[in-house]
Image (cartoon, rainbow, N blue to C red):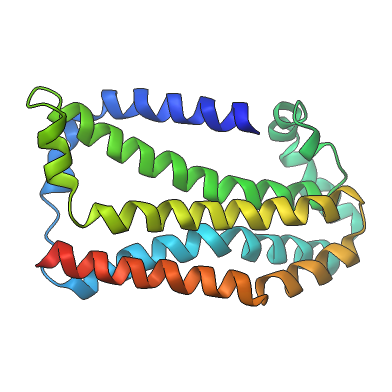
Length: 208
């Protein structure tokens, strides 16, 4: 897992370098209200934490509501993906749990990649002016926004890691019960609340 994240970071930095000439698109996005900034970032954080869980529910619903023949046919469509992912022990389990784990890990990993790519693109575009110019552009709102987004990624991955042990036992019913219980735990809800508070104040700073 650590090697995968390290590889993702390296690819994001390189992708940012390739996209450095297109940062003007982000500069051109009109942002006038703190509320619009907050809701955009809050939605991204909520998606990062909970979209994988929602897709897992959907996968289990399809698994339960369709015939074995239909589900097997749908499952075969994703075989090329899992042929690649099978090098990771996490995905060497039976359907539908391997699909659930894929969603749980993929969503926060994609968020990490997108955020790192955006930061990297801005860094490379500011490189001629120097690091101090880059830092002065990001601050002060990024002082809260970046930790909040990294927190949502960490929370999403924490949920995935917690459910991985349940999934490896191969019991679909237990996994379904555990995923319902996990998202209602106070610790995760408080973590999400803290992230939203940080994003709100970051939006106020950015619009000020």
